[in-house]
Amino acid sequence: MKKYLAATVVALFAIGGSCLAAEPYPVRSVRMIIPNSPGGPSDLLLRLLARDLSETLGQPFVVENKPGANGIIAGADCAHAKPDGYTVCLQDSYNILLNPLITKDMPFSPSRDFAPIIHLGFLPSGLWARGALPINTVEDMLKLAKTRKEPLNFATFGTGSSSDLYVDWFATKGLKFNKVAYRSAIDAFRAVTSGEADFSVYGLFSGLPRRGPDLKLIGVNTETRFADLPDVQTFQEGGIDIPIVTWFALFTQKAVPADIVNTLNARIAKALASNPDILGNLKTLGVLQYGPAGGSSAALASFLKDQSAIYTALVKSSSTE
Image (cartoon, rainbow, N blue to C red; front, side, top):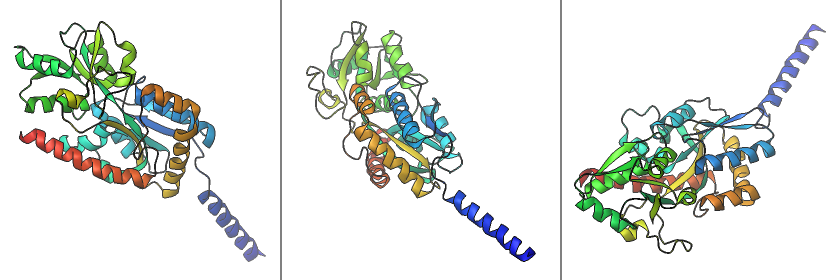
């Protein structure tokens, strides 16, 4: 009888263990870490996704804003979290590709520590200028920088950010600007709108509502001009030949089980394709859905390899010219 009871207890524990192992994901709240301040385009996009995931997967998806150090603070938090699928993070092209190339003593390695989940989209950026400056185009800005005795102020948002990279590129062409560092992209943009700084790079559609006498849009970093902005040059037309554009993607830790990554990928892909609130806001924010955006985690991994080669060449060129 004792042997029978013991065997029964062992069997029950085994059944309980197998049930726990097969527990559906998620069973509790999920952290969604973002390296930017509240209110920016990536923050708005992530909050829409968090709402969709909370409703469809039945557990809270909670957005945590951790700006600073060009994404390193947020990235380190995400990379060092327990690899159980309950911490994911948004990273942009500069956070995940430029940081390892130009930052010493990184507290984590994106290639070693992160597993790609899904590509979220591309964000066209504008080159914004203080309204009082006597310029209207990218060409005007470059001419002014060449002839002006005192360097103009360019608001940046950290080493390895797009704004910082542009200023470094200008320097290789003999154009000097004062880098004025801010905590985030939106803070740098606000510095231009207030007249505190002369230039910055910021999300095109997020900045357009502020366009007016005190703020000029002088360029866009897309391949062609926008139909609704026919008089605004592309960067390349104006003489800024840098083959980069901001994009967003979601990541988790390398050791997270593949079935959890696949669950997140499938649900987010569906949201990007069919959630009317997300689709409407993507259009409003100007987040472009083309290329690998919304594809598989494998497609994002392949895209990262291609983009890494571009950024590596760009950094090498900027440091040697």
